[in-house]
Every structure is written in C-alpha cells, then in structure tokens.
Length: 241
Image (cartoon, rainbow, N blue to C red; front, top):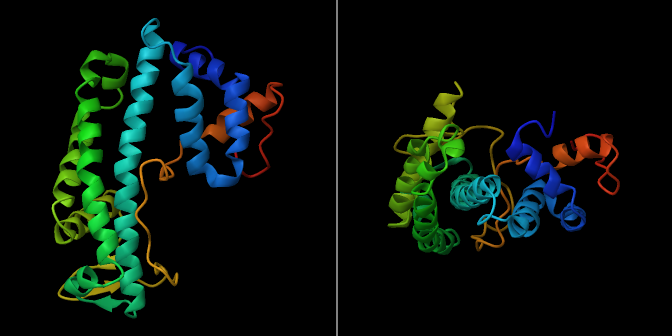
C-alpha cells in the first residue's frame, strides 16, 4: 500500500536509504519541525534525480514549495507571537500602536519585514512552476499560495502593515475553523485568557536555515510504518508517531 502510488513509493524508497535514516536520527533532539525540515532538505532533496525521473521532478518541486511556504509561515508565526508577547506584558490589554512601538518588539518586527520580501519572491517563483507539474496542480491549486505571497509582500512593507496582515490572517483562520480570535480587536486589543506568551524575552526572528517548520510533514509517522515493517534503526517512541 505504501508503494502503490509511484510518488509515495519513491519517497518511501528514499526514506529507507542509510543517509536519510542517519539524518532523521541526528535531528531527533530538535523537535518535529526541525526533523521534518532536515529530512526533506538534507536527505530527500539531494538524493533526487530530477533531471532523469518524472517522479523525482515532482517530488523536488513539492519539497521546494513546502520549504518556501514554511519559511513564510514561520515568519508569520514569529510575528503573531510578538503580538501575544506584547499583550501579555501589558496585562492582556493594549492599543495596536503600543505593540508596534514596543522597544523590544520593534527590532524583531523590522527584521521580519526585511526577510519577508525575499521569502515571498522564492515562493512566487516556485508557484510559477506548478502548471508544469499536474500532479501538484491537481492537489495544490495556486490561488491559496498566491494569497500568502501577497500577504508576505504587503507585510514586508512596514511593522504596521505586518501587524495588519497578521491580525487579518488570524481572523480568517479562526473564522474558517469556527473559532474565536485569540486577540479581540478594537480600539484596544484584548488577549483572551489562556493564550499569553509569558517568556522574559520577546520572540526572535530567525534566518531561513534556522526556522523549524510550523506544520507537520509526518516523518515520524512514515518511519513508524517502516519500523513496523521491519526497517531497523528508525524506531519511534510511543506517542510520537
């Protein structure tokens, strides 16, 4: 069943390679986000024969798209955590301008504004290649990716614009889930109970190579299947698959 689809089968084949297993095990202490990123970028991507095999070409583009998307998503997550941190420091109630002008947050927001345009360009350039790979286009229509490119481009204009984008994204995501916002908007924003960020220092902006993926790509799940099928060296602790 794992190998029935040629693309999934090729991914499983690559995950079974000794180098992939070594990368997976070596990244085990960094959390799932780092583990997923390293296996995709350091094990699977270099092993692909994108110029020789159609399946590899599709996998190559998919990994690069995922990495570019996760870069933007990671910067957005950092920006949202900045809002949570700023509100927590103010007892859960503050005007938007107070958050924007926070002396500890402003350098982080400015750094994110410098990083987002480049991340948006990388994602946009990869989106333009999707039509040549119907296997990707059928499952990942370019419109939603175009939206995040536009948001990243707008958010990179200034800290104020970035905050606007982050709040709009949060509203839309929560609405799509049928849930309330963590931050109630208005003249003064109110942080809902249970969503504070009480660390002593603010979130930090991270370079592309430092970002852990915010979303799960389920490498432990794949290796859990393979361990059950007899692949040695990839045992997954209970509760992590």
